[in-house]
Amino acid sequence: MNCDLFKALLWGYSEDEVPDSQRGEMEQHAAGCEACGERLEVWSQVTCREVVEFLDDYVSGELSAERLENFDRHMALCPDCVAYLEAYRKTISLAREALPQGPASEPLPEMPEDLIRAIIDANRS
Amino acid sequence: MASPGQSKRECGSQAELVARLRSGDELAFEELVRTHGPKVLSAAERILSNHEEAREVTQEAFLAAFKGIQSFRESAQLSTWLHRIVANAALMRVRKRNRRAEVFSLEDSLPVFRVYGGHFASPAVPWESEALQQLERSELQAQVRACIARLPDLYREALLLRDVEGYSNQEVAAALDVNPTTAKVRVHRARQALRTLLERHVLGDKS
Image (cartoon, rainbow over all chains, first blue to last red):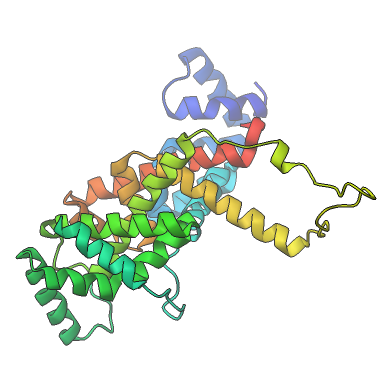
């Protein structure tokens, strides 16, 4: 097994979705490869699924120190989760920009009297 | 959700106004429209970029607010509550707009030339890059609004409260009358769904 295949199967390994025969091969590879060994250790603490599930806590800084460390280690090794996190953050800021409440200093439009009357009349009817 | 600088007097007058609205006082409704109308109209105009539609949505929002005043929570601010109502109504309008087939006349979009001399009937204006950036920004915002409008109601509400109004999870939970865990999950799911919808626009054919 090479590192690319190991990385591709890692998600399935941590979710118990890799057949036993391949699990053995992965463990064997991890024992001889420092980088993949670290990956296996990190993934056994936090999987990609968990990162995505707890992304709000991660973004809001609500994870415990220990959990945060595991998340950070996972992020350092997982470009997919980093890409997901960046897009998630961007989504929040895009939503905010698309529906701004407007700064308090911004001059408000005049509320036309005919519109006020129309609303009041519609409410009466 | 009272703002830090909000005085007791303001809280008191809001409670009084809400009580009058709840009793069906028409003068209270007029006061609500006059006080909050400009902010509601401005929010509708920002979302819709169309003056006529913004007026209609403002009216819809106030009628919905009057009808739904019983569900208003005293711990909230009338202005944020109204903003949520108008943002929702405007997004529904966006959703309807997107469903309508876009009628576009190709003929009307072709340049017109003078009969004699073959010059442009109206001068061709250079597109400044700043104007193009502005267009890109406003188009992106329109796309984002269209995507938010597509979210299921429960999730859109949660997203509006948390990410647009800036409520905490606890406040979202109180406003939606659900437990904090449910509120948190809804916000997260809404962001994930919105992210996926936006991705199709961001990546285009690559997604």
